[in-house]
Amino acid sequence: MSGILRSNRGFTLVEMIIVMLIFVIVIGITGDAFNRIVSKALSLTKTAESNISGIVGLELMRVDLEATGYGLPWSFSQTIAYDEAADAPGIALNDDGRTYASDATQDNVPRPIMSTNNVVSADQAVVFNSSDVLAVRGQSVATNAASKRWTYIESAVLPNVNPAPVRYTWSGDNLVAADRVILINPIANLKPANQLVVNSSTGSWTAPFNNYTTIGKPPVYNDAEKKSDAYIIYGVNGVTDLRMPFNRADFYVRRPASSEQGWVRLPQRCNTSTGVLFKGIVGHTSGVYDELPLLECVLDMQVVYELRTAGTTMQTDSNDISTLTPKEVREQVKAVKVYILTHDGGRDNNYTYPNATIGVGPGDGITSGTGRTYDFAANGVADWQNYRWRVYQIVARPRNLTGSISQ
Image (cartoon, rainbow, N blue to C red; front, side):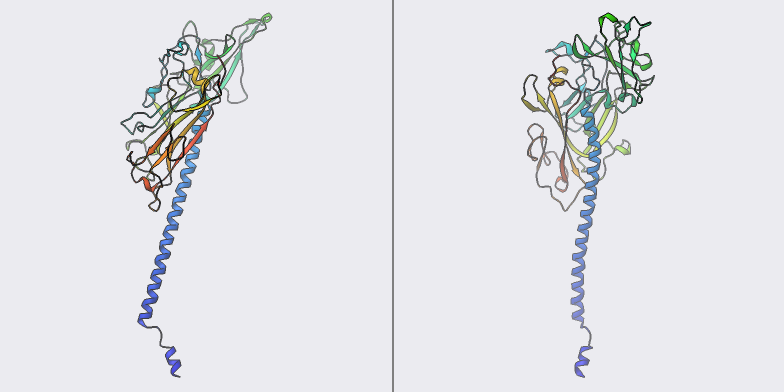
């Protein structure tokens, strides 16, 4: 009987305190683990979001790089005047009025691609200091519908009545009457020339599509000559008169000012030292950029060119092709490599980035020779240890350059 009484005594106060202490310890451990799981899940979610936005924005950039030189004049049938960018940081990359001591035939001719290596800038709202600025020229790098349209005309042959060039149109995506166009003569003196057609009397080199013959048209031949020429008509812009005989897009990194529109501001998840990679389309009215943000949380961009000298098989990397003429750029540039330093997700206090530097360009990931070895502390990057830094690489092979073709 006494044994039964002893078994019904219950728990002592000391026993209850010990059990409660065990519960508190278990709950504390579980809660900390739960917080870590939630934090990790949020970090992975932000990382996935930034990866998706990076893929979309950088794919747009890659498409433009591959279209470098599309519909671009290689020479002019006579000297013309035109204007390019009136906005920083692209002014330094303008080709209107540029001359070349080594080849006067390339004076004023637009280079298909060019960059400023490690630009000097005191204003982060314009462009990041020591980053690169890249200019790409080609009809399709704009966003207007006309820039994606083209057709061609061929010589008429006598003895046709009222001979006139034949205008070709497609079943869709045809040029419309108001589209501003240029004419390109692809062959001159039996060589590939992509020569801009200029009216010898008026000096005009552009017109609305419905009035393109005011620029020029292929010659008329006698049937016995067995000849026929063709001009290509490229759409450049819609209803806006042309500032230059091509479209141009510049790529650069800058930090939007707080006074700018909300849709281009730096997101809160970004490191405070980063900015936004922009595509700035040079406007034909005033030369000012029409900006499109491509990627957020960007710290640096570096451009490297894969070059091959004409007549050789040796390929080299270079971060500066500013001394090349337009013809040399077309012949020697085999690939364009763009390296963009950014971070995945946002700040993570439970993460420590392992290296004090990162290679933005070809290298071992920590350093880069041709590009830039970026030192976080030396550049004053705040809390850089708590971000997952990475470098996106774009390798594009332009489809509209000449390669090893001699001119």
